[in-house]
Image 1 (cartoon, rainbow, N blue to C red):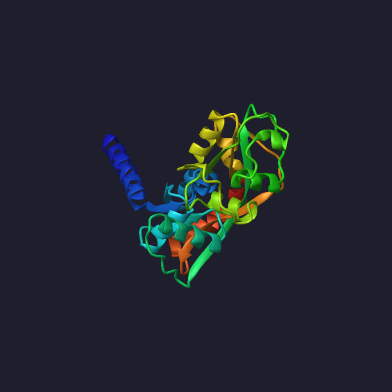
Image 2: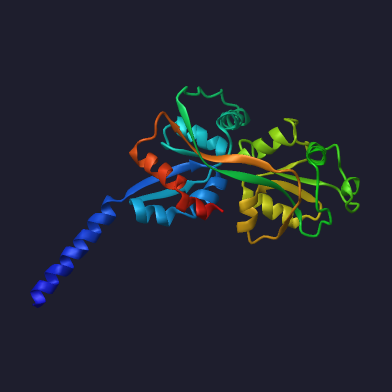
Amino acid sequence: MKRLAFVLVSVILFMVSVSVASAEELVMWGSTTCQKRIIEPTAALLEKETGIKVTVQGVGTGKELLALLDGKTKVALTSNDLKGTIVAGQKVLAEEKKPEAKIPENLQFHQIIEDVIVPIVNEKNKVDSLTWEQLKDMNTGKIKNWKEVGGEDMPVIIITSHAGSSTKEVFQHLVMKKEDYDKGAKEVQSTRNEIDEVAKFKGAVGAVSEAFVKLSKTKVKVVKTAVISRPLALVTIGAPDKTVQTIIDFLKKPETQKHFE
């Protein structure tokens, strides 16, 4: 009887080890917004249902496209439309003084959800709402003091993300009408850094994913304005392979989409 029990336990352990060993692993590169908004909240469930373990290199949308083109990943995460993603990638190269990348004609864009970008200010700032025109003028340097938009007499401190950031690209395209940021704007390397910097300075203003603000333990205030939306998606070169298609199908399921609300 003891021998039979030992055999059964051995068989079970062998089956578990085979299951673990056979689990697929996929490393995605890209948007930290996608990482925090759609991948991390569902990664455990994805692995449980499909046996696919996903991890993310959160390098930002622009660098994500370059990683895809360089073959470092077979699927990239973007928080912009396809055209904006390409623009972000080329901006990264320009910043690094490198030649433009050759873009394949068969890039495929697989949208998962829509995301909302919100302006943020220090929690002590008394301004509750801003128009797109006011936001544009503040970020381009035309408006330099909060008293010009109904706030206290204090200088506007512009906080924005790095070159290639999709959030920055969308905000600059939609709200700022493609105008350049003021030369005095402070660039940071991540959304987390942007929220932290806005929290430090009473006169600071930034723009980040609404979901990031909700997830953050750092206190900042969201300023009301017209809705600024953009897609969160996966990008592949050509049709996705079986593993990537399984992930796309999983992320688009109504049951999975509830995790993004």
